[in-house]
Length: 112
Length: 115
View 1: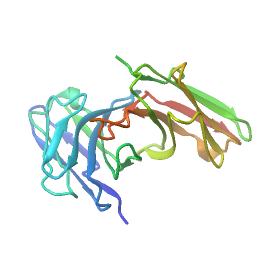
View 2: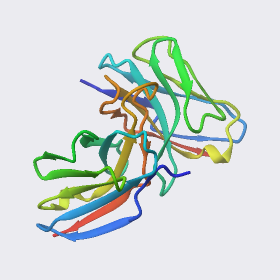
View 3: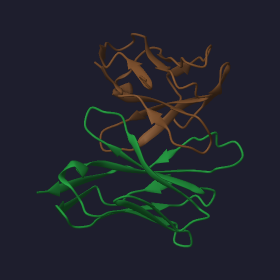
């Protein structure tokens, strides 16, 4: 049982480039989330989804986009990367609300 | 506006003693609280949770206490072990309505347990 899988684990981007962070879960969870963690800070919610085809903004959505075409996948798109997007990104899923969130191992992104 | 605060960035404890990690919240809508543990280069993993209808929840060496009037919760680890050394995050959510399980996290407390 893989749980929540994120790719890539590490990436360096140049300012203005775009990329997609992939997230897949195999637990048939309806709820999925993207968080970012900056050094010395807690996790902040970027976007979330309550099911296929339904997404909504979290606390820090600017500069990002998401889609949810299937229950399993919840990719995060960064358009026009900026140094402020240097962070560690975590994807998570949950079976119920409220409930325990299961996190992926994280994707460390550096924008230079 | 930091709705969930962990005011101690770090805590150092001797093996076998009690570790007490604290968390305060300001949003009175929060009624479900969780603690997560995070090792370097890994994602957070769930430790224990508590609903606002309770004031205590235990799971083995881990106990969470909730004081609703003070908007304060704490995690007790007894006895502490070197393998408990990690970053601990407090998180909160509102169980009903349109919360959709979204968690608001504190900044984390680095726990170091010395042998």
